[in-house]
Length: 183
Image 1 (cartoon, rainbow, N blue to C red):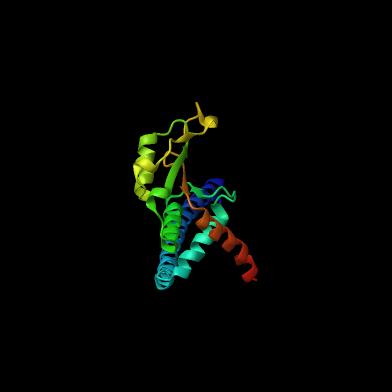
Image 2 (image 1 turned 90 degrees about the vertical axis):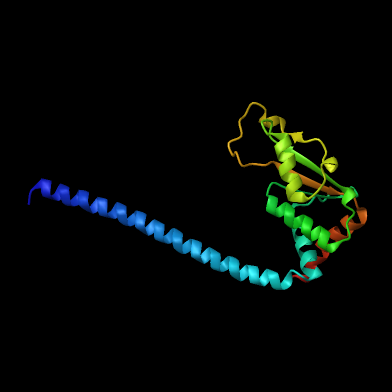
């Protein structure tokens, strides 16, 4: 057979493989999405069963604070994160565990120099349910001056402060007891 024939077979085979890869990737993506939905449904059912329990809120609060909360004993519960879902869950757990006084909250936004601070405050007020007058002035990271934000969806870090030494002490002591119990 001629070289042209082998070249043509090679081209057709490569084209077929390229189409097969695309089809395979699409199928894999669809299967992954279906599996993710099944897992979400399974977890949603589980969390719906236990979410009415005060124990659920306490474990959630202690776990989140242990991972992301401030460990300095300044007489206030300080927690920050850039993920709105994490902030929402933290506040829900805090409000679910304790009878909080909404006037004891303060919020500080830590953002980039090119951020629209008014838009960020509006966004985080909606996420937190905390009134505008309880927001401190935003803190701008000086390292970002003159550098454009690459991730346009970035909303900065929302740092929640709740002034209560009693609640802070309770949470801190719970973070110390938890590793003693879990083996």
